[in-house]
Image (cartoon, rainbow, N blue to C red; front, side, top):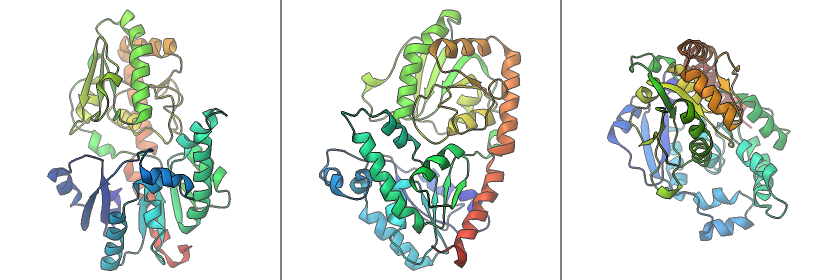
Amino acid sequence: MLRCLSRRHEVSLISFAGEGDQVESNSLLALQRYCADIRVLPYRGFRPTRVKAVAGLFSSQPRSLVDVYSHEMKHAIAAEISKRRPDVLIASQIDMVPYAIGPRGLPLVLDELEVSSIRDAARRASPFRPRALLTWLKLSLYLRRALPRFAACTVVSENERANVQSLARSYRNLEVLPNAVDLSDCDGDFGSPQRNTLVFSGAITYKPNHDAVRYFVGDIFPLILESVNDARFRVTGAFSGLDPSSLAHGRGVEYTGGLTDIRPVVARSWVSVVPIRFGGGTRLKIIESMALGTPVISTSKGAEGLDVADGVNILIADEPKEFAARVVQILESPALRRKLAAGGRRLVASKYDWRINGERLCALVEWAASSAALP
């Protein structure tokens, strides 16, 4: 996003760093190529038992937003607005909504609003444990009030658009802007794919990823090992802060931790597995794998919102036996692997390349910056 926007505009970035994360100097150096100014602030994650979180039960805002609210972020944004007088303010995801709607007279864009995971949790909620339903109701009321302040709002899929529209029926400026990759960044030689290797990419500190890995290691991978006894399953992504006993272990399972560059690991894997069972948005891990020429096997939920076709550019399976059988099928068939890899690359090139979506983003931001777009 920053790369695309900076080609035509001056961009200032004010961002949180992940809780406990150290911001590396080379990361800041890379960002300086695209940003006129950068400020990084510490993030404090949601803790349901904290006093602010408990007090949030009586707030009109979702209590997670009450608990994590940062006055330092509020003041940093106000200072940047005073200093540079920007033409538009882009808030990335729902956590940034409270900071964006404070300043007046400034066109706003809300990028990548995601509500599906909260809606799904509400649908699964027991009548005897209605917390998820109450969270959804409070979020609905909050967004109905907040969204009219934004000249435009982006979501990553038609499914997400429908879910947002269901809670804010009068809001019309919703634009589907899919997750994307810069395809040119995936064109290098990262090494040849290794037979019988599987990869799952993504931090398992994220609950849907954590569940997916436990599900795969416990219910699917043992079935694969019965047919391919030297199969290896590599899990990338950070897991610091997790209880080690919560990690699923077994023969052939490896955790790499956070990687500076994930591309070689994905590109050298024979297949990428996405056994996601819940969550919202779309899976960047699928698009990244396809861009790197690594075929994907996913659950229907994992591939939700992406314009994929089973057997053409992806394999879809929802039950453990079916999922394992399709993994074995691709492990044993180089021809099938080549077919899916080619189909995946074509799909990314046509719909999920930032060279396409970046132009759409710039056009949306430029429209929002016009006086006619002011709410």
